[in-house]
Length: 328
Image 1 (cartoon, rainbow, N blue to C red):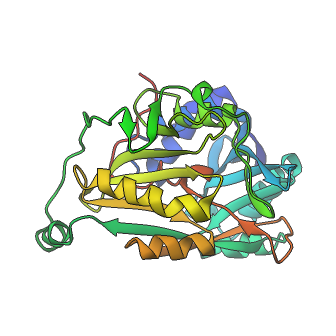
Image 2 (spheres, rainbow, N blue to C red):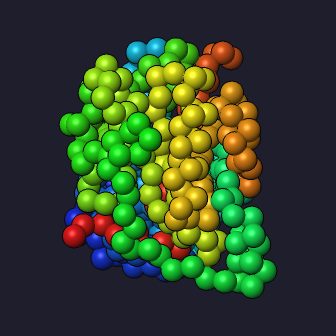
């Protein structure tokens, strides 16, 4: 008999074994699961069992959306997997249904195949495209790496400057000058509260580097970066950018990140879903190497733009061959 329920502490070892089996290419599976549980609890993990055997899972990142100051609770679906032996039996539908009962609005990236079929049957539709962008910093070095399959090593002890071209590195969310960072009209985006920023970026020292604009207490512009290895290249990932005036400031911010990164890294990665920002990224030498659909069961007006970055889901956790480490 197939049963469905939220995860409990007693499921931990079976959950770990399930992920080790079905996500063999993921680095540090245990640390990854520990991180998810620490942030959102066992209640955020939806499971299906055949008697006592774990056969399917879906994780939920429990954040909230904001649209013109209206708050809508949302769960970002991740790590959705049904044991191949049990696929095609409606188990995925039922897990999604269970999630919807608890969280009326859910979103996820559209990875194709059964994921499209399952979600479209339940009223999901594509709300935006997520462009995954890469900017090479040394065409010569990138070419050598690809040609000779040269391997880079993860740089554990990269020193990030305290001051970076008008921005200052901060050590806690409380150093930001505002309690909310959702400024744009007619934009659907995850609420950036101090609590979100603290849990997402400061759970452990030096995993993420968070920079806030220096000096101006009325302006809490900030950006978040982290070093990773991607396709054997030492890269910097821009996990999040929050600017009050994107049209005015995004181009200059990218310029300073490129300027700094050239001293240490071979490339820059960023994710973007905003069409007007895409033009700015392209003008700075970023190219789209992959495009993913973002699907949701929320209905939007035509003039509503959807802002998605690496930080909204967990793409930056699963992205590279850099070990993901949770805790001390």
